[in-house]
Image (tube, rainbow, N blue to C red):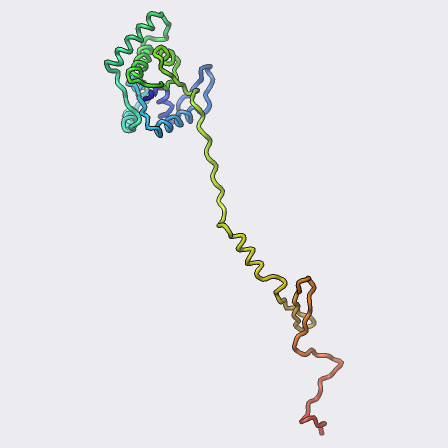
Length: 237
């Protein structure tokens, strides 16, 4: 099991979350896409995502009037499991509080320390292998219990979208078009040509030189008047 802190839940569920910062206070590039890609990867691996009850409370406070809808979303999605602060977590929390007090560490507010300790203690009690939290205090507490913490800046960038394939026409369309065009080769076509009112047929040959064939019809010639036909070859009377 892995654990989602409220900082990851807010980025994952909120359409306009506040920008995430890295450990040096610089904005994280594509922080929302990183968290969405992580959630999709965990969903594909069928690994449950535990949400500690204190982290859930922080998210509900920020949700305002959308609390009921948020609870419904987290409850209906099987990969999210709300983890209570039970007796096992209480034991882990007491030991962690003792360590913090013995070192006399400074904290901003004791209320936040208690919330963070409860979240880390629940993760320890559930045997979580990693806590996804964009919070330096949770990161420091988890290190004491030897639990790995990953922040948003530690997440890889999502892969770029795959390019869309270029749609091509049916295979062989161009070849069939060329074959149809070459079925009537210039070497085998007869092209009628009109000269001086008479029709001639020009037939190209293989060497490219056209050959003119005379028409079967007699052509009129002004220098040879037509013969006067008479009966059986006798001269007219």
